[in-house]
Image (cartoon, rainbow, N blue to C red; front, top):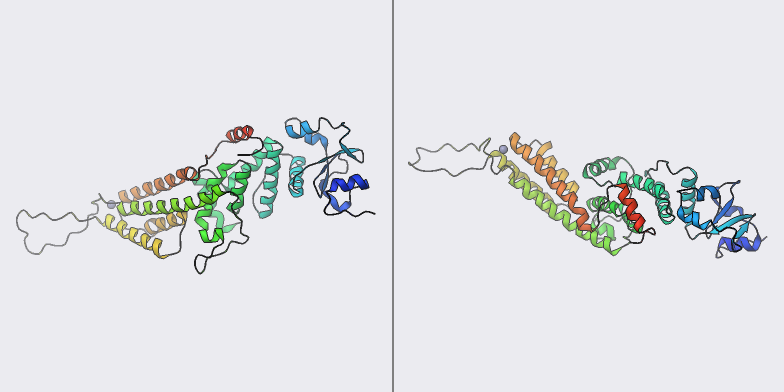
Length: 367
Ligand SMILES: [Zn+2]
C-alpha cells in the first residue's frame, strides 16, 4: 500500500491511489457529504448544498456551477476541489458554515483567536459577508472603537485572557478591518515598551515578549513609533492642564500672613495663589517627577495616576476646581482618543454597513 508522500499534495496522491488515507481526513468530515474539499494535506467531506446555498458564498456558487466538467476530479464518485487555504483555516471555516453563521463567536482564548482569524480570512476570501460580520463583531468587543468601551475592556484585562494586539493589527491590515488598529495600537503602546516590541534590550530589565510577534507592515512599525510620541505629548499636555487648574480660583484663598505692624498707606499686597492652585501645582510636580524618574509609562496608565493623585487622594480643593479638573481630564482623554486614528492614518469605521461597503469595494481584501 502506497504511503502518502509528505512532499506531494494530497490530491495527487489520491488520484494515483484512488483513496484518501484515514489520517488525512480533516474535521469536519461528514460521512453522508457529497463533495470533497482538498488542501495540500487534508481532505474534508462536506455538503455541496451548504456551500452553494443562496447568499452564502458567491465564490463557491460560481465555482460549483460547472462540476460536470470532465476536468473535475471525482473521488468515490463525488467531486473533489483543491483549494489553496491552510488546512486549519479551512476546517474552522467549514465548521462555522455547518454550525450556522448566526453563531455567536467569542474571543476568549488563543485558540479562539486562531480559529476566528482563519474563519475571517476565508469568509473574506469567499465573500461570506454575514460570517465576516459575525467574526468582526467578536473582535470589536475586544477592540472597541469608543473610549468608554475601551476603558472597560482595559479595566477587566487584569483578570482574564487578552488578545495580543500585534497579531490583531496584522490581521486587520491583511483583511481590511483597519478600524481594529487604533484600539489595538492604543493597548499595545500602553502596555509594551519599544524594547519589548522590537526585542531589543534597551536597558537592564527590558522584558522580552514571548512569543515575539513582529509587525506585518512598515506602516504599523511607523504607527507604533508615532503613537509612542503622541502618547508622550498627550501626557505632557495632561500635566500642563493639571498645573493650571485653579489658577483663577480664590476660594478658598490662601490665608495671607498677618502683616507685621501697619502697612504704609497705599501698599497693595500681591495676589497670592489659592490653595486649589497650589494643590494642583504640587500634583503636577509629583506627576512630572514620576514621568522622568520611572520607567516609560503608557498614556492610560499615566492618566490613572493623575486620577489617583487628585481624586482618590482627595486633593484639598474647592468643589468648582474639582469639577473643572474632572471636565478637563475627560476632555483631554477624549481628544487623545479621537486623534489616534489620524496619527495612524486609518479611518475608524464604526457601522457594520460601512464595513460591508468597504469590503465590497475590494473583495479580495487587498488594500
Ligand atoms: Zn478652587
